[in-house]
Length: 178
Image (cartoon, rainbow, N blue to C red; front, side, top):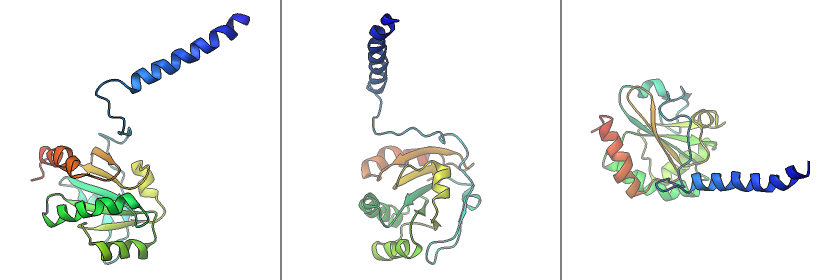
């Protein structure tokens, strides 16, 4: 029985060493959060429109690749990301739809009225159910969904110009979005 007490610290050390070895292997992006939703159908949703926007439903978006951005008025990184989304919308480079996550409708509407509305349509996920179905950890999060409604990529945190140019636009081109 005493041997178990002597071997327990060694066993714990080996488990921790294996975890760190796997976590720090070359080529692994430490910022990427795994998602069980990648390569799976996007969860169906029907959300009321935000402000003057028409309702937003997944079924209406099928048939071509789309980008869905979860945002909120209370989210500071969302405001950092917003000018980039506005530039992309003005250039009409991506089919961008927004979901205002766990926010008051009037606050989300005010955000888009103040800083501009980059979304083709924006829906209101006041209780967070749609975000939960997608596996949203926090906002902003952006999902690329192909023409068949399959989630192909998830971006956690604010998009950057580099991420858009090196990952998002090439993926949309590959999926058939011009």
